[in-house]
Length: 115
Length: 115
Image (cartoon, rainbow over all chains, first blue to last red; front, top):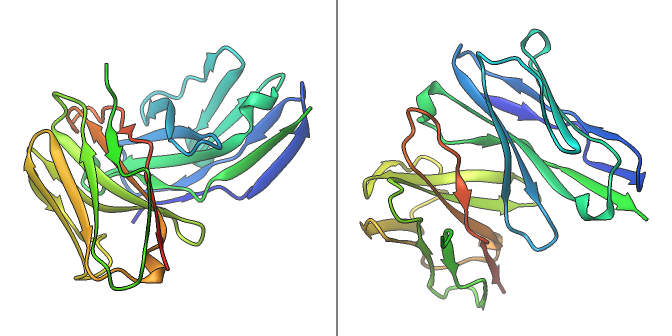
């Protein structure tokens, strides 16, 4: 069975602060993929990143960065110099077992960036 | 390029009525997924198709739910009869291939309210 835990239900920070969203996953498979999706107030799900289990290199894309640590089964997401437009619900997701079960999503973290 | 297109965006209906949600995947994508999002349970996979064939429908809540994919460019999710507990946002997503775990492209969702 696979599971994704996003322990932070809601985070509120002031604009320009850095913020890290935590994601812990569980799977018995050695090959798996981790994802982050953003759901802005408009409701759609927007793909942010996919990382496979054999690539532990951290990734940076503009103000976004991801820290993948297999030793702690974590795939954390950091937004640097947050902006009001970053306000959204962020979902971490896991796919393993060859994709037979689709994506397993965490419950999401509601990020509020205050001006 | 057009993304995944879902209709209707919003549906309000009365308990007992039949509801049909529609999805047009991205052209060339051979996998199609239906997800349901609720506050209580988060995002759940209901069913997915590969080349128009249902592969795994273990997430479908009960017999009141059915999904079809008559061709590569169209899928429906039907609820008959609908109940208030079916109120949720239903997302359709498509991808090209699963062996490389391609990115899932989500539609904007169909928000269903059953009174």
